[in-house]
Length: 492
Image 1: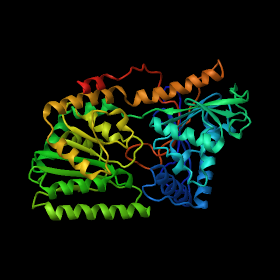
Image 2: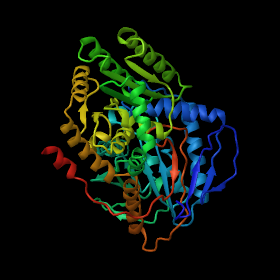
Image 3: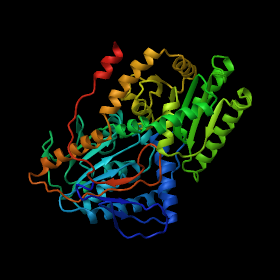
Image 4: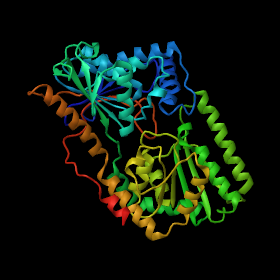
């Protein structure tokens, strides 16, 4: 962003506070104010109690309130206006996540000269679920204001394209939506194509761009003597068990924490695992604590932990070490190094970056990743032990097998996983998306000028993806190489 004189447009993190734009480390920060009522209705209400459960397969029932929707529209317009004000002529704006799905259309109406990207960090639901939303058509129209719409998984992009066809009747060709130019979302557009029916249309690309992490930074931290010593200390504090299992999640009903605890507890009850040789460390960082569903979830999880510890723990050797805190990256990397088995049992997850963080930290080529097939990461991390978290018997088998897996197999799997994670890092992700935007802009006009980019900060400190934002260009072109060697390695 510094190289491109970018701007970051976002909520400052405090309600009812007006903050003037300011420079920070060469980046223009443009705060967008939200009132306490807007925060309750737009963020905690519509974003987290309507869209979040709806987009995660209604694991919890969504709540629909007109006043929440009205606040969502109002806040999205405020972000669009802020981005429009700081983006130079023919600039690029990258809008981030489900809280701002109306911004692309609003921004295009304000600034038809701008190239607009949108990235959805969470799943996009199948049409049968998405159709429950009373404002489904407005959401799809809002997203189609973008030039490039990115999703975590190919299936998510497919679900969106089906919603476009069902709700709007627009033609789609592979990953391209043909949006009629007379549509409000494209008024003033610079690029007009002809559809197969001879109509004037604007092409919108909708495809998957799986997000990643700064894998080199995690590996570098894991290699430091201080982190390695801390990892040894963690194992010592746990009583030096033969197997340390680890779960790291926001305390969220989508993460399958209860399924994980049930499987672990039953393994202890069956005598297939013992607290003498296995311990589970569960980090459950606080999340959305003002939302009633999350309050109840915490009570349920902590009751479950207490029952398992009461039944199977001993003095000085609890079955589960439960930590309801957020931790700095240094402590998390030490935990990753200390853990023999990483348990990711999400019921639905756009990506799950914790899985990639664990792999990136294991420079020793050891450790086993047990990974839900319902995460976006499962599409890339084929050499993980993939499971269906709803199948408790299968999950128990996977956990037991992971705990007893021979070193040679652990090494083979981890090497393949690490190739994938180290090659497909966050720089490659951002470059691939921005390349797609550049290609789209080049198709619109020959003379594309460098411009200030709008970018937005996350609303809240969520653990696995940026919750909100309008981001500007954050990376230059990068060379992309196909990372298939891990699959060949795993098939040997």
